[in-house]
Length: 129
Image (cartoon, rainbow, N blue to C red):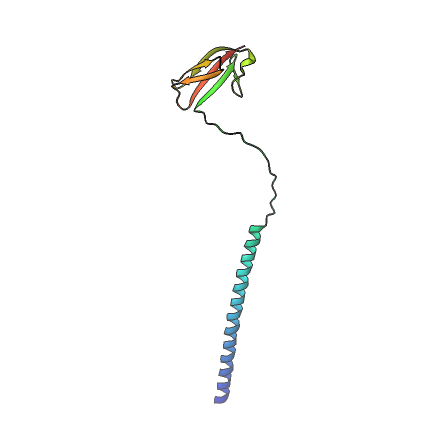
């Protein structure tokens, strides 16, 4: 009886060691496969793109900062796009500025000369036809 018990005990020990060995190798292989599949998944998702978007090509004009805004009016109507050209036959009616700035309009060079201008100053030049 003692011999049978020791044989069973030895067999049980051997099977427990095999179970531990299988469990150790199985978990190691599972962890390795999990890590490798995660690396492959993230590498694939970073390197591929399925989102297609239409590209719009445009150019942006060079930005110039002007602390003094110059506005032109012809017959009290706002002129978009800056000052009218010199050869349009307009006559100067008046010039007015905000924030205490004073301005004169030079008819020879067709330009606005501002003195005492601070930032956020707006000068309006009125022309008549």
